[in-house]
Image (cartoon, protein in one colour):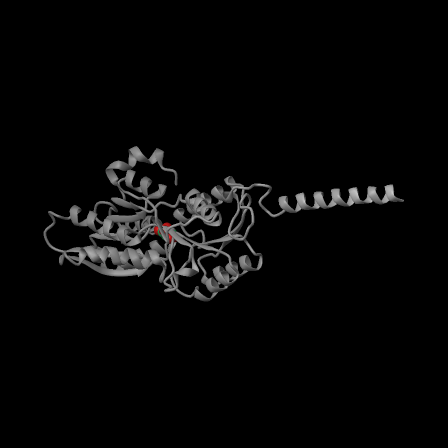
Length: 338
Ligand code: GZL
């Protein structure tokens, strides 16, 4: 009996030892000890579930940005839950609520417009799910609702576009009449690119924006609005300032159908530096594009992993960018990644 009892004691001891060991390894650190592999919630950051609410697929820029984000999340071994909002705010709010319900580890969010997201971002904060703003910002005072904003400086992009035009028209006598294709109404890039451009031209009284309307960042709408501009002011337009290359490419078609030479009769300024813009510049139909780099997927994944590993990251991370002109296009076209 005693021996039996003794045997049982040893068995119990071994079982509790096994239990203890397994409890350590299932604490989510995968048996890892270094803090870099665990996150604030004590979960391993080896494999994260990341919800990504993307604006839509409205432009070459957006397509390239989506690809960069998807590849970066996959290459890092994380699981992606992706939502394309088709440029509708209500779809983005639904997607964010779905990610919260699925208890994802992190949310990446490119807000289609600057306002109307405060409630759902508060819900994410209440659910202790960190939100990372990608590409576009929100106009919300409480910046505790997001971890960081990784994206371009759209105001600076508008300044670059206007400064190019100031230099380009330095020897021009008389007025420089500009028509403007704005991006999506209420979106950060549309608001800021307009602000940056106007900040520069206000010091040049001969430079006037004679018509300005949204083309919603798409080629089709850009062409449609440019047709209307040409109908009302055709012979009086010197320059098109387009908040993205896709609308500029649509406008180029409208200008040619109207019987004028884009790039010559009407100077064409775009933003994004997508492949289509390089092709138009190489064909002499577009004059300049201000770069807005969409390929920040790897940078965003690094920021998410750093935050979940407990590291401090800045509230604002800018993307480095340049500007390209017609004379550079042919040589650079083969090197373009998007
Ligand atoms: C800019 C991005 C804009 C692009 C457009 O970062 O939000 O949205 O300039 C895209 O091409 O539609």
